[in-house]
Length: 212
Ligand SMILES: Cc1cc2nc3c(=O)[nH]c(=O)nc-3n(C[C@H](O)[C@H](O)[C@H](O)COP(=O)(O)O)c2cc1C
Image (cartoon, rainbow, N blue to C red; front, side, top):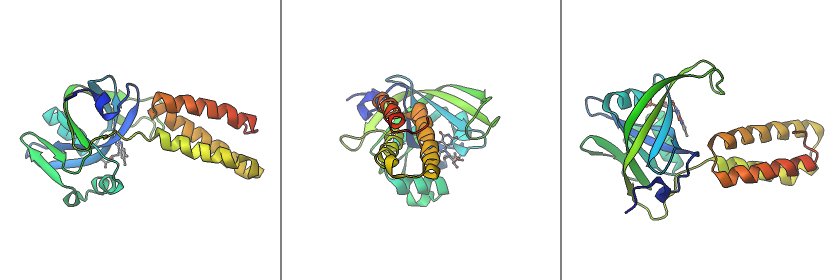
């Protein structure tokens, strides 16, 4: 049995999407979609905005569980607060999603307030960086892999590449902006091979006359 985050396809430096399950002081379970950055094979970091129940619970218990899933309905139900639709399991002082492909338990190492000067979401908004150590990984489905959205942004740009010769000037502006946005997402979240492929695609787009 591996306890390394590599066993669920997590690469240092990349950010993944997941569902965090936490508990409050009354033992009530909460579930919310959250990103998780892989620092190394055992450590992770999260950036959580102030006001989140997840953050409050983590500050109180120093524990959280990262659930790995690609099921869109689970993300939506967790975000909309339809927790009754999720199969939440309580196990002592943690909770997890029964239907997760994998989950890992995180023990908090530090929580620090971040005052971002420049933030693509909300300049000056208050958020916290939580660092934590993964203390146990449970794999429910062979081949489970943490969800990284970098590949989807890359594929969107790759599809645009096949159409860039067919479009008028207005559309070119639209394609340019979409490329830049996909590139921003990839720089922030993607794995190394996707970043490399996107850098090559940038050159190909320029060769096709996209003014990047
Ligand atoms: C895919 C996805 C990823 C998200 N990642 C984060 C994140 O990394 N940090 C954060 O503060 N909010 C993130 N959010 C937004 C939170 O899920 C949202 O604010 C939620 O309402 C928080 O719920 P809570 O109050 O139960 O913690 C994400 C949402 C989605 C859909």
